[in-house]
Image (cartoon, rainbow, N blue to C red):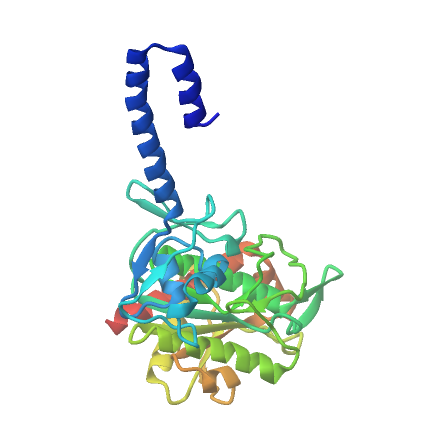
Length: 355
């Protein structure tokens, strides 16, 4: 029953003074209802400032940038450039959040809801602001129609792209927890962070923000490179770094440690690789004191992504998928988590030295 209907029924049963008292209450309730309706139906707007892009403005306001990207573009298409850039000083309408999708705050502890990490790991606690101001683009190797290197383990097929992606998700989560802005260039909305040893091979990964990955290797590399460069231009003068993760494929006998590539002409890229290598050396010395770490830093300017992306880049090989010892290291979820955390520490070290 509506407020108007309730008032009509009440008026027919009461005397004049009761009707007057109820009339005052009725007017107040109507005003409250109208104001509440307006508040609920009026979407929140924000003003874009220097350095804002769609991804950044969504994260700043507590939205999952993957889930709400298209809706933001639809709502604001008149004030967005052809390359989906924002204009400083323009007002932008934020999407209406679905329950459970926005950033939640409890006391001094903030938590980001990031569904791409899967149900178990979607809630990301913000532990520090160590990486506040840093922007990272993360590319996990291959994906979509290209699984990368493949091998057999316990009679099942394992593929490079699944393990590189899992480490990359764990890395992204660690970076976000320290206040960084993170763009996952390769995404799989169904997988999330997985703790199984054998990760099921699938082919449904997409390229940021939601592009089908082509079969042609050349087109795939161009696509992810274009995504990074577009975002790099939108993020202006911020500290920006690209991290590419792969799992190498070599002779079955050849066991390798994590090693790093950078562009030969990039001082920032070399420093980034060196800081990652030094972090891994310290970790190996602490956790495997009887085993020498042999991971190297080298230049590989002939690799398409290294040669054509704009931000300083480090290209990481996590191990040899064909080697049984390396398989044990990569297939174990605890080890994948350690790899991600060590990479995160190396990135934080580089960021601290850039200030």
